[in-house]
Length: 334
Image (tube, rainbow, N blue to C red; front, side):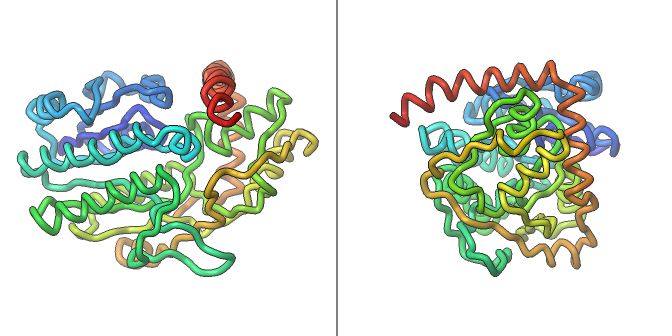
């Protein structure tokens, strides 16, 4: 069995990759720092089938010891600070983890002659679009938030290590993921949990900003396809072609939960809020024969049901999140 080293394997998308990897017959070594958004509960059912290393990817000695022990065939690099609002409050952790951490992983991967390094980027590195157009893999990067700048830096580092040192990097740029186990600072789980608890749902600006939504299991399926069949040195967009305004997503969730739209509360807009993202995924569709399988209406139904069925976990996370916003966020936005 080929052995994979998965950073951020206790996170939202990383844990889905780990679960699918075990089913596919891979031997998995997980590295996770367990920040506020990480939770080993996500991979609790398979913990006996994987190796877990608790630590920080910015700790070079720790990561060298993991590589020495795990001897991975490939690195799948999910670990990241990922929330735009937190990056606006304090960008430092984003550049530590997303840039320095990526550089350390690339250095060690070069030394250990890893056969594949899957560098997970994001559609946000492209910047924003108006009401028309799409981002292609060749579109120049134009990030606008501290978060997206840190991810663009990591993205470019990976491609530079391929070009300069021959590290076998493949760059992946997915659109917005959603699904079970997502920490509720992101739009969809936040709306679900606020609505279930009959709390006001804060919406930036007028809610007209547009995002492309991809069910988490589809994203992971695409990454496996890229890892197994993708061409080293190439970049791949992963999109669903399902774009929706934020307010449209909120209203769909409220309808599923049979909740009133009176719960919606419009707030001041996010600083530097990108208007629209949209990925052209022809490359992965044609070259690797991959397309998203889960329609948004089906995926959102599954997601809402999961949160209802897992209220102990989800309400604990919501309480933790609200404590953060009521202290750090309000302190920084007086």
